Structures are given as structure tokens and as C-alpha cells.
Amino acid sequence: MDHSEASWNLFGKYPLVNSHKTCHKSTVAQDTVAAILSNDRPLIRGVAVRVLITDLDLGDPGYEVARLERELGAQVRVARCASEAEVLREIEEFDPHALLVQWAPITAAVLAAASSCRLISRVGIGIDMIDTAAAREREIEVRNVPDYCVEEVAGHAVALGLALWRRLPQFDAEVRAGAWDAATGAPTMKRLSTATVGLFGFGRIGTLVGRAYAAMGARVLVCDPYATDIGYQRASFDNLLRESDLISVHAPLTDDTRHAIDGAALARTRRQPILVNTSRGPIIDAHALNGALRDGTVSGAGLDVFDSEPLPADSPLRTAPNTILTPHASWCSREAMPALRAGAVQNIIDAFAAAERS
Image 1 (cartoon, rainbow, N blue to C red):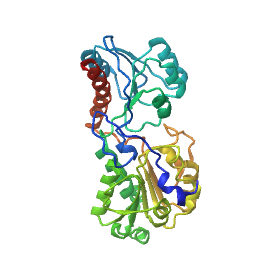
Image 2: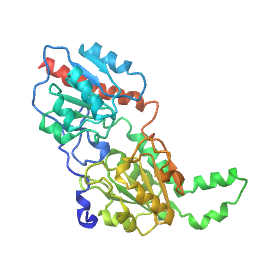
Image 3: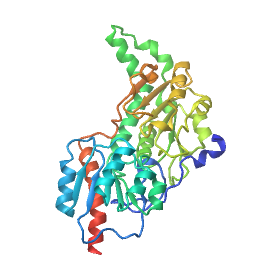
């Protein structure tokens, strides 16, 4: 990909429609996609709605089952699918009208087998595990929960960036080892007000991240072709790479953004930036990042998401210098967990209850 010319096409295009929340068509960054597909195909009337929960790692699915049974009179089947074959087996046995999906792969083959399916509700924001083109072709609506963890992810991203900017991992290690010498780190530390922070993606989460850095005096650049009224300086992808001291990733994972930050992109950086990713792991080429961390092209990385999760035990990122690694935890809070589960269930209740009323 020619990053200099293709930078404004890195995000792909999703037709935005209604979800259980209103979505303003200002960006397709991952944290703002409210619903990807909609259609006029009739939902089920006069029969018990069958809902397949393909997978859920958030605890006992009793909450989801109870609400769907109580509010829709639904028949609910709970599975633990991790592969296409497992999803196919469940669909063939249960013939669901709706899928509640967390991580299970909803491929074109799965959708071809799901002849009765009218709706997919994603337990989360990103929808990269769903073949949306195949869903569109079969007039299956896809909904997500776009706003349950905006504050949490933004705070996590800023925390990772600031911890690396202020050398907190190094200071912590030095004190634990018996040292007490802050001055030696001073030559490598700069005031945040002298920094340029580049945001790759600018939806709800990116907006909060930009606001936080701007409040501390940083110059903020935004690379997002669909964002409007950003309040900060726009930048091409190339300029973002060249000018940023810290790059924070908030874009969706699409065919175009997969490995957008690869070896060639990292080689075009000029300021040994810190790289933070709380969006989707495959946006960054992990192999290239590992090399850039070890040769000093990138001065640090705060990563909450990875190509493969859980992070493999033999991943070189585990030993890469100046990194903070967290287990896809940026969404977590006492408030976010119930909001996520409630939103995913509400998508299904709203769709089928509305069909019964019409």
C-alpha cells in the first residue's frame, strides 16, 4: 500500500444505520460504529424467537438467558464456540433467528447455513469477527454496543501513553532494585507541552484521548478521513508518522487498516515515537514493532490488544524493551461490564419486540 496516497482510505467504509443508540455519521472509527447493516426483511412474528449465544467469557450467561426468556419469550441456547466448525454445528442443530456473539467467527459459511437468522448482536464494539459483506448479502442486520466503555478505553490509552512518557516502568524497576537516581532519566524526558500526539482514528474514544492530551499542552494531530469538527489539526498518515512523538491508535480493523502500521510505516517515523494501541491488535504488525522497539525506531509501546489473544507465551513482545502489556483490559470497569451485557441483549429485544408490535 502506498501510505502517502492511500492514507485517507485506510478506514474503509461502513454504511451507518440505527442501533439501540443513535449514531452520528461523522467517522467510522471503531469506537463509533453503532450498527453496520440494516434491512427491510421482516423479523419473526408469532413464533418463539430462537437465540444462539455462540460464546461469552464475561461470566455466567444467566443474565442474558433470563432477560431474553422474560422479555421476548425466547428459546435460548448457550454454546462455547471458538471455531467456524463449532458455530456451524450449533446453527445446524438449533436454526437460530438471532446470534449473540462475542469472539466466535461468523464467517460467510456460517451465515450461509444460518437460513433463519435475521440479526447478529455483537457483545462489544468491534465487528471484525463477523463477515459483514456476507451478512449484507443475506440481509442479516448486525448491531454492536458502541458506547459502553468509551471512558474506560480512553483513560487506559492515556494512562499507557503517560506512563511511558514519564518513564514509570523504568523508575519503578530502578527503585525496586535499590536505586534512587531520578536525574539520570531527565535527559530522555520532555515536557508534554513540547510533544505532538498523533491520533490514528477519531471517534468517541479518540475524542476523549485528544482532549486529555490537549489539556496538558500537547499539540494534537488527527488522521481520520471521516471525522468532522475535530478541533485539532488534520494530518495525512505520512505526516502523522513523521511528526508525532506519541501515536495512539483508535481506528477500526478493516482490510485496509490491517497492518497499516507495518515496518515501512514505522521506518517513516522521525521522532522515535511511543506507540499506544487499545483498538485492535492486527492494525500494528507485531513483528515489525518488536524490531522497531529493539533498534530504537520506536521508543516505547503500550499495548492492550494483540494479533493473537491471549498473547502467546513465546511472543517476543513479552521481552521487548520499554513496553507495557495489558490483557485486552481497557474496556473493564464495574460500570462497563453490566452496560456491555445489557446493551448486547437489548439489541435483540428491541429488534424482535418491534417486529411483534408492527
